[in-house]
Image (tube, rainbow, N blue to C red; front, side):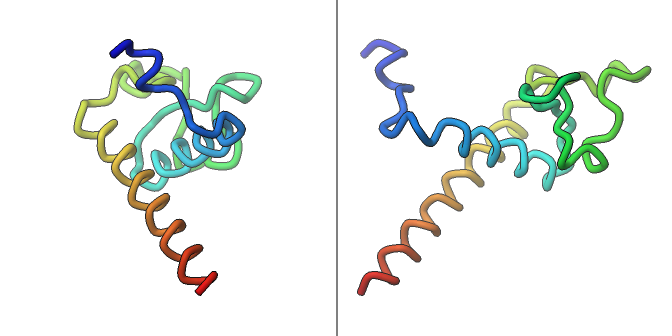
Length: 95
């Protein structure tokens, strides 16, 4: 199976919401990443948690490449966990 078909989102309209969720969870976990939507690449809402991005320290680079697989995976796992919880609550609300 081609990679592009595997990673295609079922509901493309949710792309920005998922992207925002990813950066919020990273900030909650204390992971230093920048947000691609800002003027300087920093997430403005969670700037204090993320620290100075692009400053003097090379260990706090913007982006995801400097994080370990475990750190990146923990963010993805938390997204999945929260989406499942939201779906379960939505289903229970309709019963």
